[in-house]
Image 1 (cartoon, helix red, strand yellow):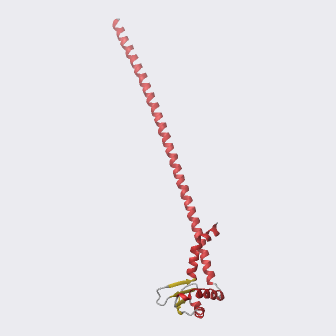
Image 2: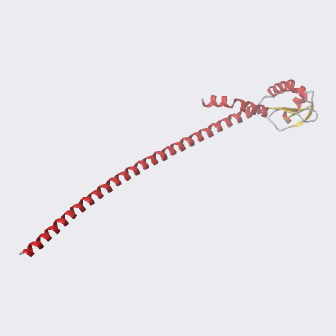
Image 3: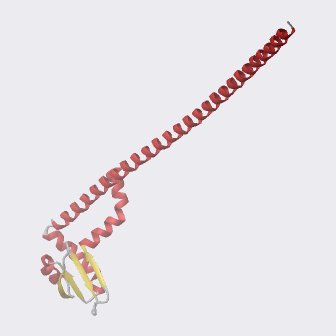
Length: 183
């Protein structure tokens, strides 16, 4: 019986060692699984935070883009209104009565005639300008009205056409006009 006892003792010791190894392996597997779960949670949390940041950035970009488009549309609409106002001003100038046109031409000629030797006007105002000015009538120009006064050799040309006056006034008062129209 001694041999059986030795075999049994060896078997018991082997089984105990297997049980211990199984227990250690289970503990190690459990630890690895726990570490993997923690790592997965961390990666998931980081990915979620990054996704949320990306969503915030994209949302902000979309909002900024939409705001920019609204501003662009608003500015284009305001520009269109200002252009209409300018066109209406040109139409009003074109519709001056002959008396009003003569009064304005007289004022321009009296104020600036001494600066030149030749005078130009549009065809519609030619007779009035010839009547009001002592300068040499040099010809017709394409404009809404008004006059151009030139020195003898043509090196100095003073443009007092209604077109230039309107453009100058428009540029000077554009901000004020915009404030009046759009607040």
